[in-house]
Length: 102
Image (cartoon, rainbow, N blue to C red; front, side, top):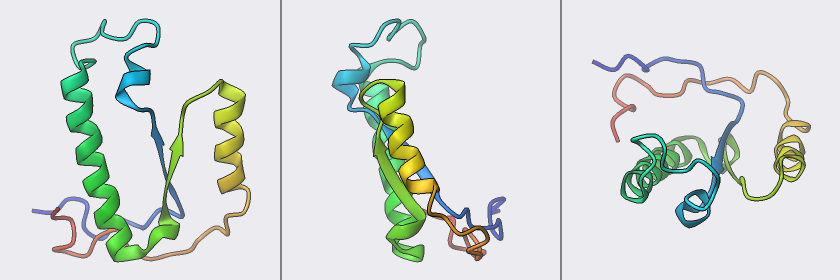
């Protein structure tokens, strides 16, 4: 089964990245059971595989990594720099029936 097959392709996927070393230095890091360096590194690797798969099918323009290091205003400026130029409704499907496999 591929429950995500046929879903509309987002105009843009924004993936906020923070190096695990920086994330682990932030206040309250580690208070939740999923906030371990090992698990966060594995999750980051999985998301990179999804990103690479999406880019291989749809090109680089549909997925952008934004470094989420800095204060809120800096990160927001990076995001607005990407979304302010979007043209809505670029169209397409995220995965075809067998494309959701990674």
